[in-house]
Length: 220
Image (cartoon, rainbow, N blue to C red):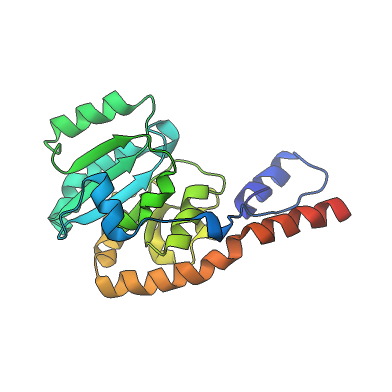
């Protein structure tokens, strides 16, 4: 299993006679992130004063982007210069475009569609948000850890195990908790502190650790 959450669920459902936990891992050397300036230029969000909220994922039910789009008018009351950029495509794109138009947010929310090697653009974001209804252990979240960009993610699947700070976790679809934590994360001091913690915590998700975990399983 790739997370403690999934392991405990697997035990409850009797999916395996013996359970093992091996976290997903990434080889840091392949994460050739663009710099903040390069990434913003490539994405077309190069106004320096914008507070760019970003996400990467399929535009589908599991990722729950309707929550993020619908709550964005409230986000703008907290941070008037916020802009939302979502990289990804999927079956719900037309639905999301309709909500954006109805809310009058076409100049505040950008759906960029699919982009190859999307992780390279993470440093364009001041804050990465993952509003998913469910996850296993998100590779995109691990990539964001390695970038040092602060995160705000739902308390589902392995997200809490991936993130080192409770400040980066909120209960699924809880608007009040989301907005309270978002407001705290608009502070430069808070984001810099969390960034340091995330970079340190990323060492728990290296490819070497994943390989070691699988080797230990085969040696049992």
